[in-house]
Image 1 (spheres, rainbow, N blue to C red):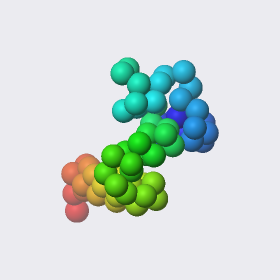
Image 2: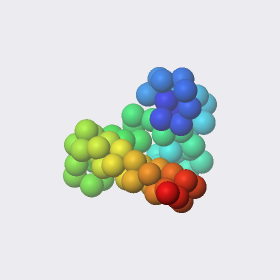
Image 3: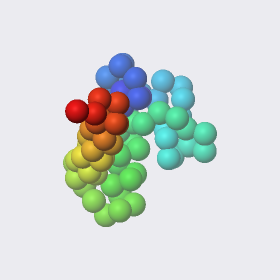
Image 4: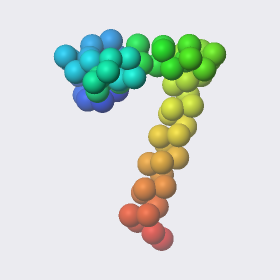
Length: 69
Protein backbone atom coordinates (compact mmCIF):
# COMPACT_ATOMS: atom_id res chain seq x y z
CA UNK A 1 0.00 0.00 0.00
CA UNK A 2 3.01 2.26 -0.07
CA UNK A 3 1.56 4.21 -2.98
CA UNK A 4 -1.47 5.22 -0.88
CA UNK A 5 0.04 5.79 2.56
CA UNK A 6 3.37 6.35 4.23
CA UNK A 7 4.23 2.72 5.03
CA UNK A 8 6.62 2.51 2.04
CA UNK A 9 6.03 -1.22 1.60
CA UNK A 10 5.10 -1.52 -2.10
CA UNK A 11 3.75 -5.07 -1.95
CA UNK A 12 1.63 -4.81 1.21
CA UNK A 13 -2.05 -4.03 0.65
CA UNK A 14 -2.47 -3.51 4.41
CA UNK A 15 -5.58 -5.69 4.31
CA UNK A 16 -7.37 -3.36 1.88
CA UNK A 17 -7.01 -5.51 -1.25
CA UNK A 18 -5.14 -4.65 -4.43
CA UNK A 19 -6.76 -1.81 -6.42
CA UNK A 20 -7.82 -2.94 -9.87
CA UNK A 21 -7.28 -6.59 -8.97
CA UNK A 22 -9.61 -7.28 -6.07
CA UNK A 23 -13.31 -6.40 -6.54
CA UNK A 24 -13.23 -4.03 -3.57
CA UNK A 25 -9.48 -3.40 -3.47
CA UNK A 26 -8.32 0.02 -2.37
CA UNK A 27 -4.54 -0.25 -2.07
CA UNK A 28 -2.30 0.75 -4.98
CA UNK A 29 0.53 -1.76 -4.82
CA UNK A 30 3.37 -2.98 -6.99
CA UNK A 31 0.98 -5.63 -8.25
CA UNK A 32 -1.40 -2.90 -9.45
CA UNK A 33 1.35 -1.46 -11.63
CA UNK A 34 2.39 -4.90 -12.87
CA UNK A 35 -1.15 -5.75 -14.00
CA UNK A 36 -1.71 -2.34 -15.58
CA UNK A 37 1.59 -2.63 -17.47
CA UNK A 38 0.72 -6.10 -18.69
CA UNK A 39 -2.76 -5.01 -19.84
CA UNK A 40 -1.31 -2.19 -21.95
CA UNK A 41 1.77 -4.06 -23.18
CA UNK A 42 4.12 -1.75 -21.31
CA UNK A 43 6.95 -2.25 -18.86
CA UNK A 44 6.28 -1.58 -15.19
CA UNK A 45 8.83 1.24 -15.31
CA UNK A 46 7.12 2.90 -18.30
CA UNK A 47 3.75 2.56 -16.61
CA UNK A 48 5.05 4.19 -13.44
CA UNK A 49 6.67 6.95 -15.46
CA UNK A 50 3.37 7.70 -17.20
CA UNK A 51 1.51 7.70 -13.89
CA UNK A 52 4.16 9.96 -12.36
CA UNK A 53 3.94 12.45 -15.24
CA UNK A 54 0.14 12.55 -15.06
CA UNK A 55 0.14 12.99 -11.30
CA UNK A 56 2.73 15.75 -11.54
CA UNK A 57 0.64 17.52 -14.18
CA UNK A 58 -2.53 17.25 -12.09
CA UNK A 59 -0.81 18.41 -8.90
CA UNK A 60 0.80 21.35 -10.71
CA UNK A 61 -2.59 22.30 -12.18
CA UNK A 62 -4.22 22.23 -8.73
CA UNK A 63 -1.36 24.25 -7.26
CA UNK A 64 -1.80 26.92 -9.95
CA UNK A 65 -5.54 27.06 -9.32
CA UNK A 66 -5.01 27.49 -5.60
CA UNK A 67 -2.10 29.91 -5.91
CA UNK A 68 -2.62 32.03 -9.04
CA UNK A 69 0.15 34.54 -9.68
